[in-house]
Length: 182
Image (cartoon, rainbow, N blue to C red; front, side):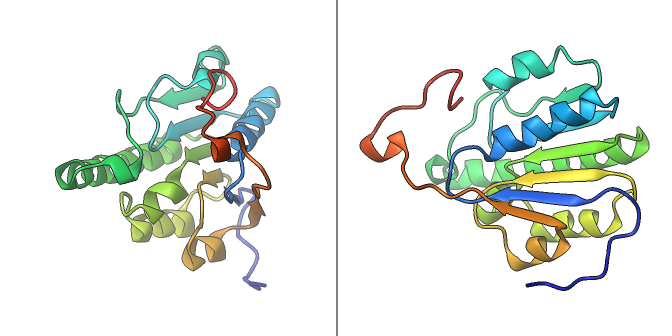
């Protein structure tokens, strides 16, 4: 296992990954816990529209700020080449915007939901994300989710937790259900 030097400061980096259901739910739970303790939390969701069910509740919590993404989203494999190009430009601008906001406005927690997925899909610059993690504010706790994080992201993380699928209704073509999977 990776033996890196301890991170300076109190803010650590979490990655929730794997092919199982619950990565976003885990990250959101940590955000709620932090907000309940009085921490200021900033959330951005890559690869998801602004209609996810959890947003309705989280928007009511004073300590949590959710930044809007695109109104319409598709899975990465559904994107045309032009959409992929535009999405990558948009996501890289969003990463710059959200990380600057987290630092300048002194947030305690930053949740970059599906950032690992966006990197793996070639829609988010891994170098920019790694550079941010290496230079983030010392007290900022950062949460990343998505499948198959690369070695560089794993090396920057302090926690890496894998959520493994053993069985899932998608396997027998059960569509996503409101309030449960979306």
